Length: 293
Image 1 (cartoon, rainbow, N blue to C red):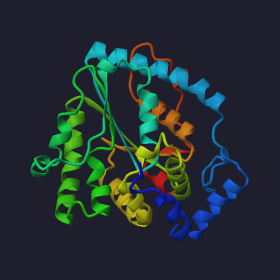
Image 2: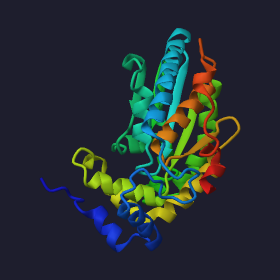
Image 3: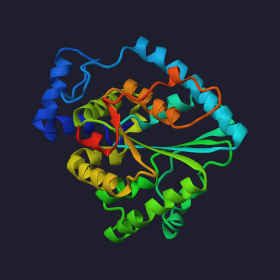
């Protein structure tokens, strides 16, 4: 069966990609250095070794189970938002978070575009019903921040709707926190060359082609518009009470570990092993200032 976007990534690479981005990818490809980090500003030259990654991952997944057991015991409500550009690693990070959790008390929320009925509702309404109940961990693969970035970039909302979103999102999230919800906002930030390389890999992998959407393809030429929208969203929705944590995700393995450590380090659950949790890698993890690293 022919895919609607077959060859679209390859065409963009050859015809529209900025020359410096194309040259960075070609330099790595020509040397067959699959584990080399493309972005010269990334603090590491190569991806984390798989053996080192797995040695750190398993203890963190054990800690996540402890966190879940504590949440079920205390009826705590935990919500983790994963945001970021397409191919930033949101789904892969969530997969590692939830891999060994009890699915009866852990959910992944990845909503499709709003229905005709939902477009007439208060913007946050369709997300509220997916918030965690007592004892649950909920992971949002994209969230209400669609309005701040994707909807804005593609013209799916007007400026009035977006301004209303920014006026309401702070009080909305503060209300959740004051009601006892443990809310974590994680932005995975991937470089332009690495994003294009991942798209190219998806296009050529029959097991991953389903991940490529019309929005993904159209968004390739909107890098700067995305950048502006992301910076504005960070500026207007980051607060001391409900902060953003930005993680550079050009190396997916380091990014996943940093995300786990960030969440685990901010919850005082029973039998916590602080040595296993460690601290997020400050070289790739921090506040909105990481966007400009």
